[in-house]
Image (cartoon, rainbow, N blue to C red):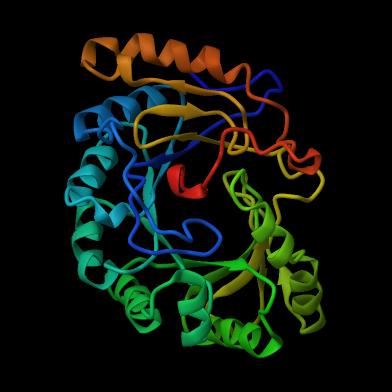
Length: 326
């Protein structure tokens, strides 16, 4: 069975938040820091996560990325990875992390079956990093990147949200980093949410200049594989890694969408900026509901919108990226 929407798009990739807690205070996400919502349900348990992934896997999902908040704040993260990687049909499990605990956790996560790591590194300048993230921890995060490479993750992806103020010198440092290390640096266009309109207006920078600068320097766009995400990646002879960008505001960005999202409390989000969240939790209480849940998912995906409406100022229910992992 395949999970397809009304436009024929096939979905083989699940982004699953396992917590909305985060220990950073990123200016574009949680400038005031994370605070637990009064009376909120607990995040999905390992058994609920396993049941959810089993249902998605029966519909052809092959790749799962664990997000947050900050997923390494879950003490049972390695057990979650092991449970998911053992589900028949799941080929790759990864995480997106701020890198705070990665140098310590990377070996255990690799042993549990984790296949890839995305680390957020929004600046290579210590002062700018502190200004963006609210934490003076650049060196610790960079140790996490190195720890992931040492643990045997072949390619570590580094995500940098593109903000006004990134100068050519720092861009050069990101590019030079890929010369000696097998990392994939991706500059991500700042996305507006319901809570950050002023920040977005003050700090948004189109990513077109990244592509123009790379091409001017002799980099070439890598051929895309059918299972690739939205990143456009550039390569250059002599560099162990790559540099690229993700531009959600470009025309046609949603045409090849292959991913669905579920929140840490079990709400299906058909589009990151959609206006409909559907709780799946009632189907996760028992293994006996697995077949029913697969049918529910197949029906819900039929109503996935063709594209987001950011250009019209519609942000949907996404108030902050911390709750769904971006």
